[in-house]
Length: 392
Image (cartoon, rainbow, N blue to C red; front, side, top):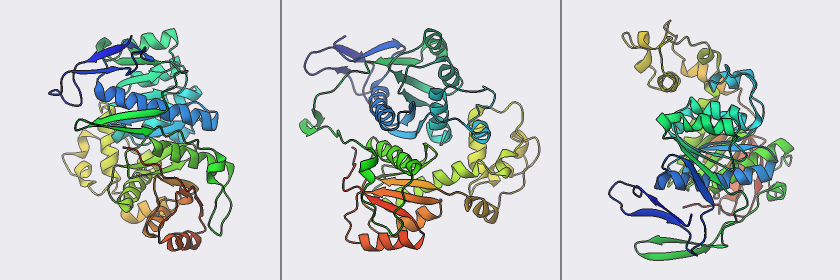
């Protein structure tokens, strides 16, 4: 297949629309089910690059959950604790395959943002992963292959309209890429930067210790940022992104946004949230939204009389700001990556409140000394990579 006609472009009024190879060659994909759209393919191709690089960097199965050309979550296939299995709503599925664990983590870190996602998988989609995908609201999936039973499960999703794409894992794009804006063609070399342990060799803080786990998590952060709309920062813990701040003009706003997402991920593991008793009829999306409101500033939206009865079997106590802070202070060993330098130490102050201990960023600010000094104040280890990772 040399080209594929699409229903429309970014919006219904943008016609005609298609994907094709500029050299007239064969597309490296097959559509096994559904009719993926323009934005679906943007998510799929960016997500596929991300998980392929995560697999190469870590040796582990990887998955990402994309929305509007940025990842809402990304993870490698480490086993799930009982707590994580419960907050990701997969505790009823038994022991999961590494690939299914990767997607459970990628989808579960920020379930509000992942609603209606496009999924990318580094490995052949197995039955465990297909069963997990089946129960979630999602637009589609791309993978290098599908087990026969897994494909049948996915083909039955969305009344037979679920988008399933298979990509040639050996496909290598041309070293130059092009993009048209306002009738003008831009050309640049592809960002083929390899992110591995050596990427974090220049540790500039008094604390020089970057554990192997820290280097793995920093690699996950930086690879995730490589395919996230800039400006962006990414918090990672235990092999998964727990907070991604994408597309902000201000660096500190990225750090705050991603930090709040990381905080929410940790608050969902608190006894106050784990002990919530939901009515039997509640839908998954409504349950996610109720938790998001309960741990936030608008908690009365779900605790007011006449509201809580539709959500909970018993009215929960208010999760006070003091109780939340006490729980958040238990979050530690978090890694943080930034796609460009931190201009001021305020980013480090905010990161500290979300348990950050390890940082990777390009460096190069005129205030690097202040940023380093702030890291030293909290005993953080920070590496300067010397390389920016903007993505647009």
